[in-house]
Image 1 (cartoon, rainbow, N blue to C red):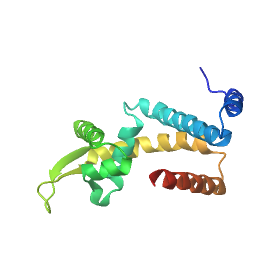
Image 2 (cartoon, rainbow, N blue to C red):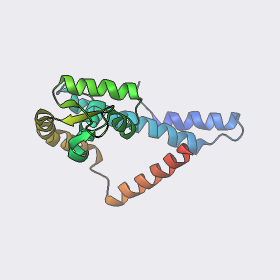
Image 3 (cartoon, helix red, strand yellow):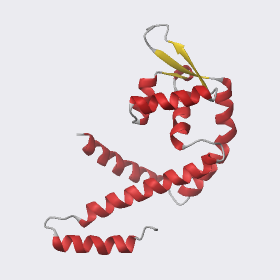
Length: 164
């Protein structure tokens, strides 16, 4: 079944007529945000599938890559990606299995494990980045700098409200 904005608008109008204080705009914006998020995720995952990975693993690898000295604590990875500690551990395990990161004891606090990007991990990023970047650019090609700024402002505003 494919998403139909017209059907959504009709359904929202019916709900609005039956439910007091029902906000068509809020529900429509929330539904569009969900559909767009799912489609963006699918779009990226389609590009990553040929490499045998998904967006979570890709973003986890990039998080290690951009961290100081290409090292990150698993708890920091969890926070950056807004994942549970268990999910971050699973991603860490997979990156270790693929030889993209190594686990080391933190020399400043021997109770902590540090994930460190390997040369193989960096090579993998460099290899697939051009294709992933191109595929992403295709999805966003109609957006201007002003569009990006406005979208970021609105989403940041909503996120701040949700975090309160």
